[in-house]
Length: 162
Image 1 (spheres, rainbow, N blue to C red):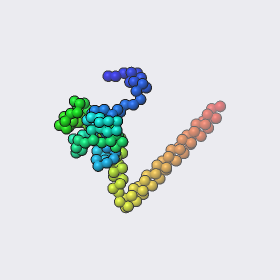
Image 2: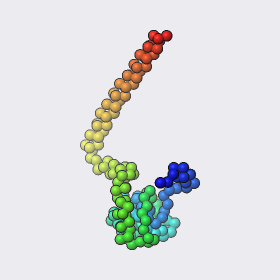
Image 3: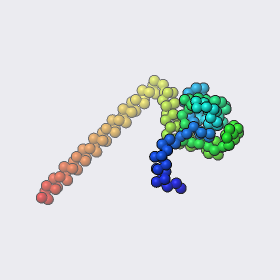
């Protein structure tokens, strides 16, 4: 187990934790394979990398770095490993399940659901939010009133004691 002191010192010295490196998992933000996960297999130059997405049906191809968002995940495989090697490392690291647990993946999924809503669905959602907010406001003011009442009764009891 890594000590917290060492880790915090390391983080101060190394502010960047996501490097463009072989085995780094990236989210494709633009292009033909938008919304899929890929693994960086090799670095071509400062703007392009060779990627492979065996679990997300992305063939081995080159992509520009400005089309990718680096994730915190990294898998280990030999330098310029074949698709079979990358798939094996991907499944061993359980990347798909780890990705589904992240807040990033949940936000992407929620955005996709919102885009699929019809006019009537949006109307129902708006009405449900109004009802929720009204209930929340009522509870807030009831609690506020209760606290105010408790303060006044405790203040009056203190005055009686004196």
